[in-house]
Length: 245
Figure 1 (tube, rainbow, N blue to C red):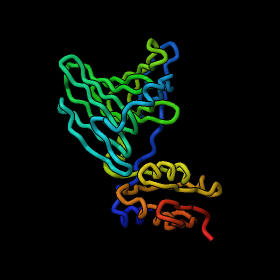
Figure 2: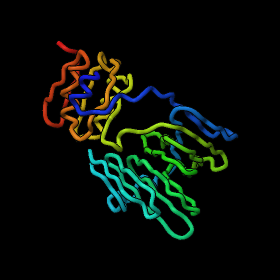
Figure 3: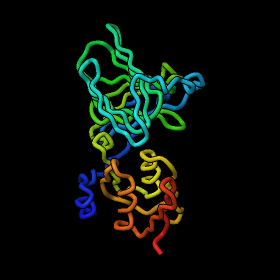
Figure 4: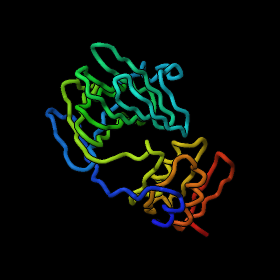
């Protein structure tokens, strides 16, 4: 895999990190070590799901990753297929995540900064963190500093998460650190149009490496060099991964 990384022009595989989770259940919990991770359950927000994504302040297409300077001097990265609205004034700094995933480096500013989703709110305390919408809620990963969480369905039950680490997609890389192939392909599919089908008998094969998201076809074609699999491009929009032979 080290040789594969070199030929792909990739970064070294990231060290394994322990995923930490936190959910508000009547008390504040503090998590330290590795990359802090928390999940906010989805609230009943039908109106949110109909938000006008096409009119969002900032958007990315499928496969596009974009870096954007924020009005306060912070930095924002938008992952694939992402939409956000910005609301900055003298009293507050708000980012509303309508779709996809963002990574944020906050700037020093006394004005409160909040990321809003249908599932709740995340307020950083001087940090670098990401927020991602999923089918079941909102996932917050903290790479440095602290983030306070406030679930929409239980405003009085919050949590604070802390972490130390880094993402990868903001640098255009998808990192697999002993990751199941099926999970890896599901993540890779976010960066291309069409379907990646993974046969169940190879879904649990473990993959290590760093892969460039700018060329997902290249990533798929490299898999047989690392694992006993065949990759068939049935059409440009339908790829099948099965056991070799």
